[in-house]
Every structure is written in C-alpha cells, then in structure tokens.
Length: 278
Image (cartoon, rainbow, N blue to C red; front, side, top):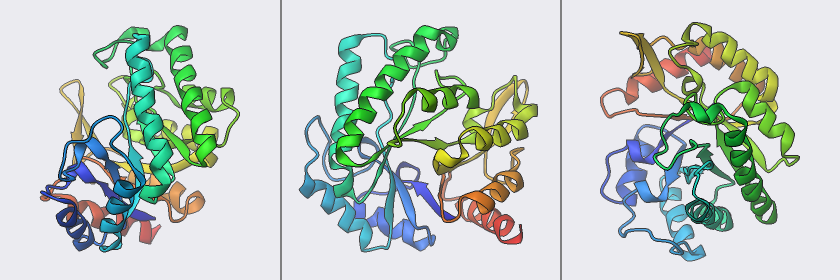
C-alpha cells in the first residue's frame, strides 16, 4: 500500500512547506482540497486554470508527492435546487482540470437532505437517495467527458450510509467513472459498532472491485458515543482491513485522516508493521 495524508491535516504556510513536510514522513500522496490548503490566495469560483493546477502539481512533484485525490466535498442532496447547482458546478470545475493536477479522482461524501449538512432521519428516505443519485449521475456524465473518476465516500450519518446503499448507487449508474473512496470508520455508528467486521467484509463483497482509495482513522465507543482516536489506539480492526488490502488492492493509496504531528509517526508505523506481517 501507499500511505498518504490529507493536506489540511498538515500544518503549513505554503505549498513548498507542505510538500516538504509530507516528504519528510516518507509519504507518497495527499488528498488535496483547494479551499483547505494555503496556496497563497483565496480560491474562488472559476479560479482553476491549467496553469494553476500544473503549478500545484509541479510543486508537489519536487518532493516526490502525488495528488491521490482532489477533494471537493459537497452536499449532493442539498434541498435547494439553485444552491445544489452551484455546488455541482464547483465539482465540475474540479473535474475539468483534474488531469492538470496530475490526479484522476475527485472525491466527495454524499451529504444530507438539509442545508445545514447535518444528520436527519430524512437521509434514509427514498427522496434523499434519488436526489443524491441524480447529483452523482450529473457529475459522472461530466467525468466521462474528461476521463476522470468521481469518488464517492459513504458516511453513516449521510444519505449513502451503508454498504448496501453504496452498491445500489453503483448498480444504478452504469459507468466505471464512479468509484468508491472507502472509509470504514465513517460507516460505523453507535448502533452498529459491534458489527464493524461485517461492514468491512460486506463492503469488499459488494463493491471491492470499485474501491480506488482508502481513508484511515480510528475510533472508540465511549460513554454511548463514537469518538475519533489515533490510529492503533482505538477499536477498529486494522488487521482485517489490511489483510483485504494486501489480498485485493496492492499499491492502493491509504490516506491518513485527522492525524497530527504528535501521532502521525506512530500511525504510519502501526499500519506498516501490520501490513508487512500479514
């Protein structure tokens, strides 16, 4: 596997410092979200050009770092049509220039059926699913024109919140330009945490062939709540996930989430040791 990190989890003041810090950890890739990275100016609608994208790509290349995922996380189920179309336009802009960033995957979660982008029971309705599906279909049609991938990430509190719902999306959109960014901890909640192994196995069973990147973090169930933890300090079954990666997904990008300067070295060592000894 190839271990990387989200850019906005690395403290930096400019692109060169960011690239250097990633290289110092012997990481190979990053998830790059334009609005969350210090690029020297405030990004606005229509600001992406081939020149700007190539500048960012070339800066990372100096440090042997690739952009594994171009992050453009939007609410695909936003209930206001006008605001939803603006969000979709932003994602399409990332699609058009993804290749100039040296990247083929543009990633997003699936959102919630409200403007606030927070959990609501309505996320589980057919209305929410169909609205999200419609948004994904629009983005995939654009991605097909440019030969890139829309990476969909499931989350327990969002619309696409189970392995079965993710499989339904893939079955409904007959295109290989939609694939899965698999974050197993995102699919774990207070009701299903004891079935985490089943969630991981079911995901690989239903859409393992469509997983193009992995997000890595950890959790603990404490005081009736799911809380994030440093990788290796929580309850997530990494031996299971890493064995499936080693068996079926050689050289896949595994991107650390929520890592800090205090725990990133331990996280990398933990994952590498398990993987090497499987």
